[in-house]
Image 1 (cartoon, helix red, strand yellow):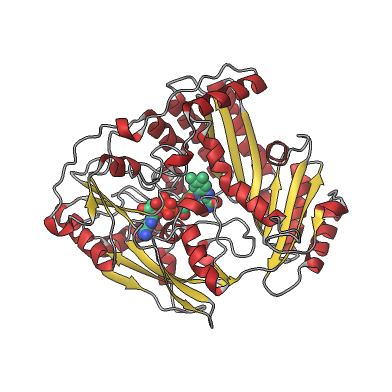
Image 2: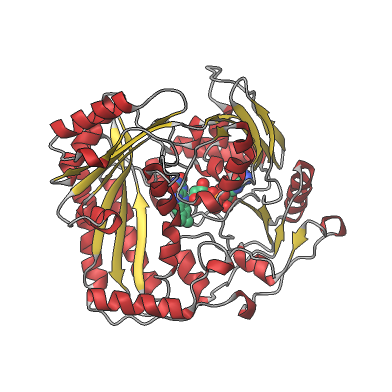
Length: 533
Ligand SMILES: Cc1cc2nc3c(=O)[nH]c(=O)nc-3n(C[C@H](O)[C@H](O)[C@H](O)COP(=O)(O)OP(=O)(O)OC[C@H]3O[C@@H](n4cnc5c(N)ncnc54)[C@H](O)[C@@H]3O)c2cc1C
């Protein structure tokens, strides 16, 4: 059988860890941490039995829609901790009744007309990498149709003069890059989910790439967008910039599937970089490393990557001693040598107390070094993109292991970090009898950092989801009360609603509801995400 996406693990079925592999992981972790972990068995797609589809598919839509068990199970969840646990256990109480695969815009219109006329919930679906319940079907609908954009995956047109490309929304990260490559171009938007997330999903969630200090969010790349709504098509002008009233593109960005189905977009592309420089600088503490990152950002050197790992993260990711924080800096350009910029960044980092050996500074080179081996930038990016595969092996061991991210202005840092970390550690102590919280700063702006936290604790078998919910609540409350956003890039979905509702102005919610009523009068599109149905 052809390889296909795993119903429970990150990646394809061919990369699912075997039960033996999970048992090895359990043995190794038990030995390392003095635990007695046991590996449960994941539920395979072949053994699933789902609720019968509650709708019948009109003849005209027969070639677009599937009611196959695998298709419905695969589209029932995204990839949050809660989703992964339920997929692993084979818990599917509310799967979509049908999954539709439109081939062109006209199909999207027909599908939305069908859902509107029947009152079925319609869920736009890109790569399914949502970690906030963004693609999970809502309760209370007599039918649920998930609209998977996978068949609309082409780069349709390239404008080399303006350096822009028109790309269909269902194209995954690697499909975009491989179609741009023959023209020497690249989008260079690398969220960690790059392999299995789409342009449409990125726009709908305002995703953030890594290797991305100057161009971070997909917002920075969007030139114009096209979206099919139940009320008709929405298309904006292609412009390098515009001051004409509130931006129509800004309403598409972050719309999370509640206003329409994004079908294609013009995005800004660039020439593939040839000049690179990279370095890692060691610090005595997270605070001094983040002081250096702030100074580099405020000097407007615009490194392509400027991330800070705290003591725990630098130990786990870079094999350091657990007593030092790490600042990772990288520059890249298609045209301009990056040596001077890197030298200036290193000087700033040293002034802030950083230590770096000359041998740890790479001042030239491209994606490959002179011997044809991958350079540090591509090694880093590949290991970063491979990381979710290692999380597959932690499933079924009873561990509670999740991440959350936010952003805050510098004047409230590092106090913000102490408050958030303290609240999550207290919750871990209370709920799990202990655990770890680590932090890295994934994005740095002149006015503030975007910290990304990882927490791990031991769950009681069968109670992991309730225990996780208590810790997640503590984390969300701490971030919100300390003034941070509930998400810098993971989106709102259904899971972040309680805190998003506090963060956004009430009048904005009313305006968003009014917009939705205009574009989606029957309220069928992704109900429960961002605002109430
Ligand atoms: C391992 C892992 C790492 C991640 N790393 C990052 C990261 O580095 N940066 C980051 O920003 N995010 C990250 N995420 C979160 C996630 O990948 C992003 O939110 C991503 O943008 C979702 O894209 P997708 O195509 O998978 O969308 P989906 O998960 O399929 O959908 C997400 C939301 O967008 C809507 N949507 C999808 N396609 C369309 C469309 N064509 N039209 C209208 N609405 C649509 C859906 O209805 C849903 O609300 C990560 C997730 C995982 C699992």
